[in-house]
View 1 (cartoon, helix red, strand yellow):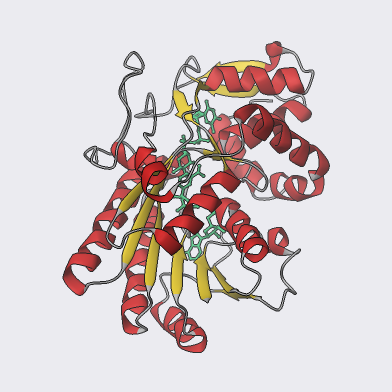
View 2 (view 1 turned 180 degrees about the horizontal axis):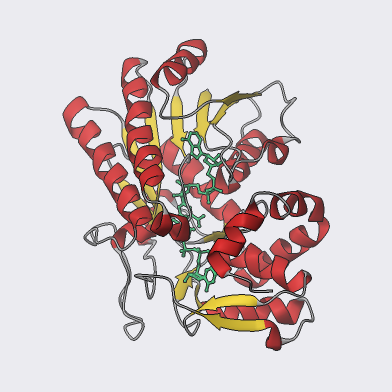
Length: 340
Ligand code: NAD
Ligand code: TDX
């Protein structure tokens, strides 16, 4: 079995590559990544010389390069993680989100049609459903919740989902889509909530919490997401969408306080800052379909997952220090001003 994984030098894609090489030692994994600011080849250093692994630096928008890689490898399955993934960046610069997340996906699907792959899997997000009220814990996103996006990021992901379903209906491309809640774990880029707060706390910098920190996200340990995708690409029904989430809703402020407590730092580091534009209030996934049809259940509780994640950032300072000392400084200043 040959699987092309796009975006494999990023957070979830790299964890998926490690998961697949561990759990399917006879598979060949081919990674395509253009190494944007969010992609890091050092993340893949432990597998780069693995005879079952191959890396191509290429952009999913580049038709010729993608065609060549498909021709060379003749893959069975494509798992598309490659995307611009940060909501705040989509608010200041939406154009690249449309190009990579929508056009890039269509380029990959055209190659998937031409080379007759047996599965094209699109990694999507719960953000395509918009948000839920804070005071209605009974309401959860199901696969039939209407798409109702808030940010250029989520609109681009929803557009890609619609294109994927259109390629299935029009060309009979064998597709599946997964829509997962917020992931956390090793190798997450420092711009996202959990690594940002861990790293700032370790550096005794202020922890910038949007609004009052009352927004709710439904957190899933990254390996549980990888396992769900593995199940879907092998046993999921063609043309179907699967929600993935672990019933683990938390207010942002509670996560920030928990991180401070674990790192034995003072809550005085918390700084409430101007809210994100169009900030979604609450995400919460109903994962019954993937549980009932494919037997998936999350295995890592938040209590265990957050400890593992904090320990990982503590033991891998070199990985994130290299990132936060470079171009990231300019992003950080633009985003958070002179927050110290
Ligand atoms: P990430 O930003 O950490 O990684 C994205 C990767 O894609 C990077 O390695 C980057 O170099 C690569 N990439 C970007 N543009 C590319 C292009 N044009 N061509 C080739 N490669 C390109 O993102 P992530 O958090 O790992 O998310 C991966 C996928 O999962 C995304 O599609 C995202 O929408 C989805 N998702 C993420 C979460 C989450 O909580 N992080 C939750 C649900 C779904
Ligand atoms: O500095 C911050 N302060 C803050 O309060 C940052 C970066 C975030 N937040 C808040 C905003 C959100 O309510 O924390 C919450 C989580 O923020 P992000 O880590 O930016 O994630 P989110 O916007 O929820 O989107 C994530 O989950 C769905 C991923 O980035 C997406 O790629 C995925 O699709």
